[in-house]
Each structure stands twice: as C-alpha cells, then as structure tokens.
Amino acid sequence: VEIFALYSISALIGSIAVITARGIIRPLAPYLWEKDKLAIKPFVLIGISVYSLAIFLSLLGPFFERIFLVWNDDYAGVSIFFSLGIIIAVSRAYSQIITVFLQGAGLLKNAAIVNSFAIAFLFLMIVFIYNFTDLSNFAINVLIAETIMINTALLIHLFIYVTKKKFIKE
Figure (cartoon, rainbow, N blue to C red):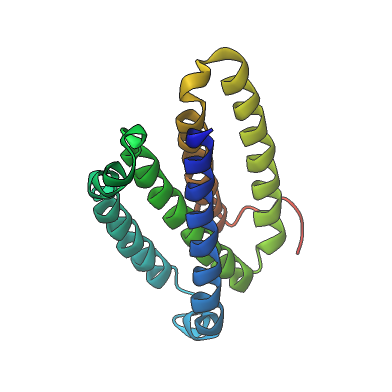
C-alpha cells in the first residue's frame, strides 16, 4: 500500500508540473511562435534546461529518503520513487511545452493521434507488467514504463515536426 501511495505522489508531482508548464508556456507561446517563423530552437533549449534540472533534482532522492526515514523506518528504498517522479514530472511538463509548439506549427491533431496511441500502448505495457513481472516491483516498473512512453511520444512529436509528416489534415 505504501508503494502505491508513493507512486501516487510521483503522479501528483507530475500533474503539478504539467499545470505549471501550461501556466508558463501558453502566455509565452505567441512570442516564441513569432521568432524565425516558429523556430524549434527555443523549445529544444527549454527541453535541455528542464531535463538537466530533472537529472540534478533526481540525484537528491536519497536526501529526501533520509528525511522520511527519520519519521518511519519502513520507508527504506523510496528514493527511486522520488527520482522517477521528478523525471516523469519534467517529461510531462516538457510534453505540454512541445504540444504548444505543435499547436503553433499546425500539427495539434497529429499530436493528439500520437498521444492516443501512446496512452493505449502504455495501457498494454501496464497489463503486461501486471501479468508477467514480479508484483513487488510493480510500481517501479509502471513508473519506468510511463517515463519511456512519455519520452517516446516526445521524440515522435519532434519527428513529425522535422519531417512535416501529417496523418490527417488540420
């Protein structure tokens, strides 16, 4: 039960990051779109900076684990949840930033199709993890699968923009 509570905390951190990213990037989006006829460079620089910050903050997981161990000795090993939660949070936030970019590029419906397939594939991965892996590591495996799917969808979004592939007309 505690493991799933920590997974929920990781998901909550990701939700807060998404709301923050939406609040920050949407007012700035028209200014970023006007530069060089929708240049991707500012968005890539934002991505590099937020992922660098995520890697740094994920290294602080053991520090937070020590704080929890002061309260209760049963929380040994929770640093992985904090680390993965921070990486998922940043991945979700950057996904929102890329969605705003694709909206400016006129590829929002195509991004929605990619996100729909990513969610369906993540569901299949979770069913596979539940049925074919050790359930004691279920929450960690789900966090890893979710991180992989979010970042794969981001790479597909960038591929769509670079190649100008359109699944449907906007």
